[in-house]
Picture 1 (tube, rainbow, N blue to C red):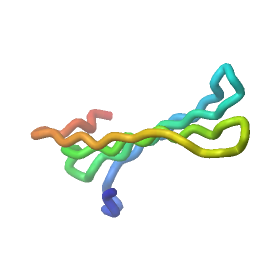
Picture 2: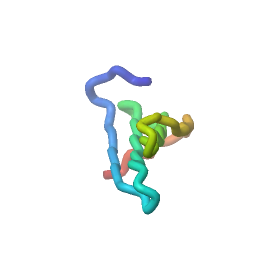
Picture 3: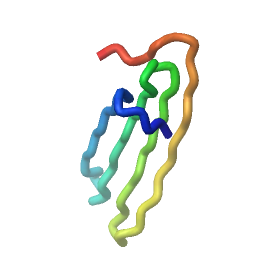
Picture 4: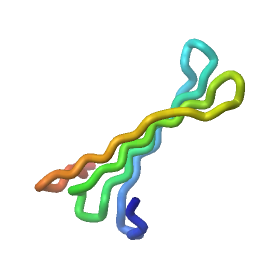
Length: 64
């Protein structure tokens, strides 16, 4: 994951209908060409699961 202070991030948190807590963290590299997408879930039994993916592009994907 990038440690560059100029990297960008988007964070979303919501409660699912089954009382789970869902999150999404998108971390963009400073040049916007690499994206780490992490989706953690807090289950009702307090365990944490989730998934994630990494994407790499030829152009800047950060367009906020």
